[in-house]
Each structure stands twice: as C-alpha cells, then as structure tokens.
Image 1 (cartoon, rainbow, N blue to C red):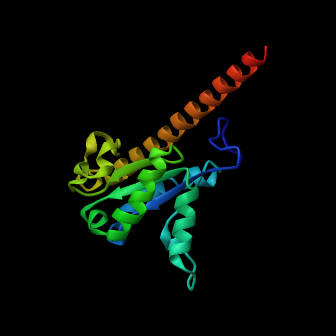
Image 2 (cartoon, helix red, strand yellow; image 1 turned 45 degrees about the vertical axis):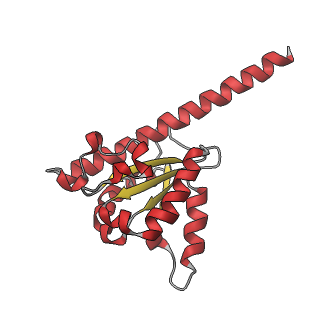
Length: 178
C-alpha cells in the first residue's frame, strides 16, 4: 500500500517517538501505542519503548541511545511514573533538558489522576484535552485515538514551524548576499 500524500518525515526518515512509562501502566500505554501503529505502518513514525530491548542486552544503553535520538518523547503520567526514580529523575530530566534545548518535542500523556502539574512536567501542555486522565474517559479507545491524533498534530505543527524557520533563515542568508 502506498503512503498518503503529505507524509510526515524528517530529512533522515520517519519521526522517532520514545515512550517513557512506568511498567505498572503498560496496558494503558499500549492503548495509545496501538492507535499509532498505522502511522508507523505508513512510514511516518517509528515508536520505541523499553520492552523492545532484546534479552541479554544492556537496557540502560538502549534507553539512553533512544531517548537521545528521539524527535518526540511521550511521558505517560501516573502516580507510578512520578514514584519511579528512573522515570521521573532520569528519563524525565533528559526529556526536559532536550525540550529546553529544542532538540525534542516532549508531551505529557495523562494516564491516571495524579499531581503531575506541580512537577517540572506541569509547564508542558498535556494530553488528552482538558487534562482528563485516560482512565476517567467513558470510552478509552476514543481517548487513546484523540491522544494519538493530537501527538501527530503536534508533530505536524513542530515540523512546519521548523521548516518555516529554515526557509526564513535561508531567505535572510540569500538576501544578505545580494
């Protein structure tokens, strides 16, 4: 099957998305991940999470490599995520650092009711809309679909703005040569 026109990609290929979540929330994270499968199938994105690490490999190396090269980092918020030293202090800090440097788009995804807005992640716009946790939606499939679509919209917006900035810089460079 051919990919649709307007396919989202970087010059180096598909947009890479890193999933940061507490293992207690894996089933909820999976509902969002599954809504993004079609985007991966058509070549727009590549998803990655720690369950993809082959047995016997050093997990820290894989996580460090993937979070550093991801274009988008999804932080799946719950009390489990906030209680996890690794999620909160390691992956969360790397994500925020990359956000501040504008080398990655960081999006909190609210899975369960928790006090995430008082954390450093609270400065970022979270999903789903109105901050209603995924577990509080009557239809979790609909909520997961909305989250997936919002992630893709955010990527589109970010990609367009980056392309526009590059075009403007190029125009300024060319005009200064004249």
